[in-house]
Image 1: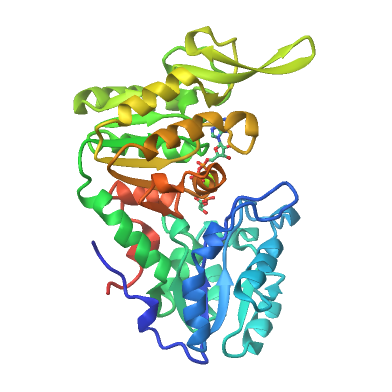
Image 2: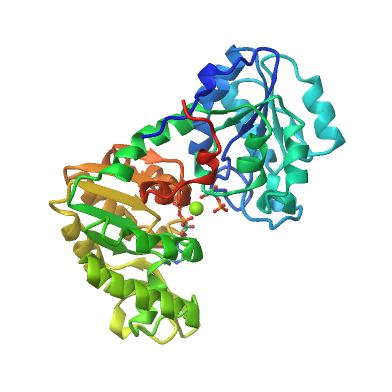
Length: 395
Ligand code: ADP
Ligand code: 3PG
Ligand code: MG
């Protein structure tokens, strides 16, 4: 494990400390925070900074507004939530760069906390534009990386800024590295990876890195759809582009070479229109109506997945196995995680939406550790070098 120089070592009294947090939290349709775990997990660092007399400036992204201001994706509800959690007002800057942000950060007194508006309202963030990074860096004197969930992104706030300021890892980032390192270096085998969720384009290439590392790979959620379509199931949704065809063919060849066992859903819960009414039915995969979209895994898949985890020493889980925001489609994720509770071994969960599901389903005791990172944790346990960590000085 490569430990990073920690925020405990930084001298922060009276200084403006720019902290990258990952407040990309699941939201309710009205914008309210649906699960505050990513905020809660940043509190020890924020408390440390406050007690040490720092002037704290928080920056985060929320969603994927694509470089444009989107009122749906303002961080305002998060500032409100954080104020309550910290027990002190957390004012917002209406933008993350520019004159107003400069003035607001300059006016902070020791122990105060300010939240900047969504970084991704500017295209310079995701493009890692040096001029945008310089504008952000100008707001602080010290940088703290506390956004473990975003360290796999080479963006201005995660890579550009730490190149310009003395940089430290926050307490959460340090703990994530410590907890996930055994899986990265030497997972105890048999090792089962259970992967679901929706970020298909992001996660598909990463799944291939489990081949040879894990003994069994269980694939559910929307992520299973391209695999099922490739194997000839009449599934709708994500189109099987020639690029995807090729990648999945390569995936199968590698799976065979490495001997990694791959299990896909064998039955799915789908919505079916009948006489103007929408009904939910469980259908075996070969009998899916043409173009159907699976919204959850069915009971036969649940049984198969639980069976496959029996006898394992390590289980890594990321991504809900169904559309768990809808009560009709939580059963698959709930049953599989319930099953995991009675299986001994080292179980690690990961992901913003996954953590929300764990809390709502009351199955947190299934896991020794729940990472705040989704894609970041997935990449970290595969041994990938994460740009937002590489850029930080070692301890
Ligand atoms: P995490 O945040 O834990 O890394 P993702 O962001 O990849 O997970 O995926 C979470 C999302 O995946 C949830 O919003 C859930 O509704 C969605 N999802 C899971 N299975 C399906 C499915 N079969 N169809 C549509 N969406 C799904
Ligand atoms: C996440 O939720 O995984 C992180 O906040 C990163 O979000 P992104 O996938 O939109 O970069
Ligand atoms: Mg997510």
